[in-house]
Length: 156
Ligand SMILES: CC(C)(COP(=O)(O)OP(=O)(O)OC[C@H]1O[C@@H](n2cnc3c(N)ncnc32)[C@H](O)[C@@H]1OP(=O)(O)O)[C@@H](O)C(=O)NCCC(=O)NCCS
Image (tube, rainbow, N blue to C red; front, side):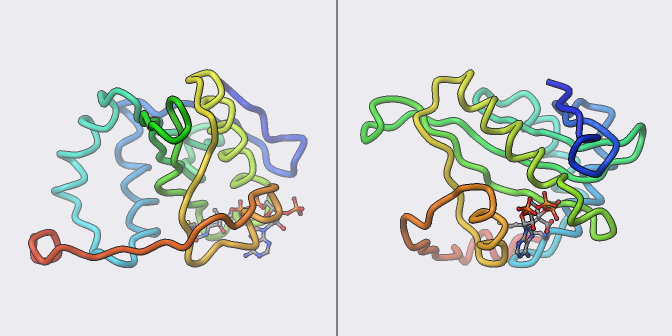
């Protein structure tokens, strides 16, 4: 992958995450968490499972050893699109590194990954970042509903 970001104002690259990136991703994931309290213990369990999961894509924006942002997305099969579609589930850029094109580089890399996976579209739900997605050419398409299951809500 290795999408360079130097042309867009930051110096670094976007690459797929590996086992050694767990700590950096955990810090960023804790920064993103809002609806649920971030659990370091759960993260330790889920991180290797996500890296190994078929159809999962964890992209990192890095500058050397510094983790500046990540995107977690998935490919899944559908009937309505006659095949796979890609969903970006989480994206976050470290607070002090925002506004330099890192989010754009992460989305661009995810779009490239989705295309190589034969996905018909890239979609996502957002509450806080609609202007960011509009700037990247995304169109509003549906309203997002959710119900938090009490079982998940009460996990430690
Ligand atoms: C949303 C987020 C990932 C954007 O990352 P970023 O690196 O700051 O974004 P970029 O610098 O790549 O911006 C890309 C474009 O989006 C625009 N943009 C980014 N954030 C914006 C905002 N809040 N309002 C308006 N435009 C915005 C930029 O102006 C830029 O447009 P341009 O290239 O035409 O100038 C980052 O702000 C973030 O991590 N926010 C907190 C977590 C969050 O809300 N995640 C999304 C959950 S769905």
